[in-house]
Length: 400
Image (cartoon, rainbow, N blue to C red):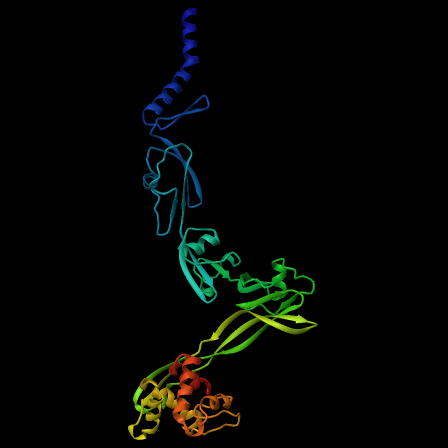
């Protein structure tokens, strides 16, 4: 073999590998392959991208020509179950390399919220997102604890367990300010104040005391020096629903459903001087027991044979529609005795106090019931606006 032939053979041997590699890469890139690497750079056709897939705890990097996340998931044979989440959403376009797709599998979680137990399937891993997925509202002060149980049968829990420990709602007023809502896990009033970095001024009063246990709805007041707060329980009057009964004698009341007094708690800010209360201002009242309305009827029948009362009221210019109101009041005050005087020195049919008021208008008041009725008619309308209103005053309080 001559020198020329030897040189050609060596050249071919030296470069045949490089030509082969170039041919393979060229074929892969423009034939069935999806990407090539040359000189540290990625060469790719415009419809092919690299996708990082995370599913079932594993990361996989694969090339794809699929246009959307949903198409890629289907092509990859990933089966989605109820509650699974794909991020980004399945209609998202795959338009760049290193495109990351994550599949989060739904799993059973038992949520225990006091006496309420909720079972859900969720792909979320954060306790806050789990309760949101379950439609349960929580406050920032509530604590959420997510654990995995080892004994599903004994604990009657399916999958993971999320326990919600609710903070207790209390109300706080600082130096006369309106009550504000707070939620706390503190055990006492003192612990609550420390938890919220609240230090009362020197000489200020804390009501209730610092050792008082925290309970739901507890109202805490911090008052300035020379002030304190007291809470009184007071009755709430019931209303009366009255229906006229023309079959009953005037003034006769028939109680169908007795009224029941309610109850309220009234909070007062008390001003002190030398340790003694000198005045108090209402801060708040809360009705704790609602009153129950009394339902009753009242007779409106004025008998014709009694004549005297009817004729007297007519002669005094009293409207017939007010007869039963007038009759009720006069009957209870004096039993229709014009000269009646009670132990307090009140005179006449309607017991005018002092009696001198009646005497000044009706000098012969003992024997002049018509003059008296005119006097009491003026009083009823001037004081209460009507005989109807005067009647309700007499009925409820026993005086008018």
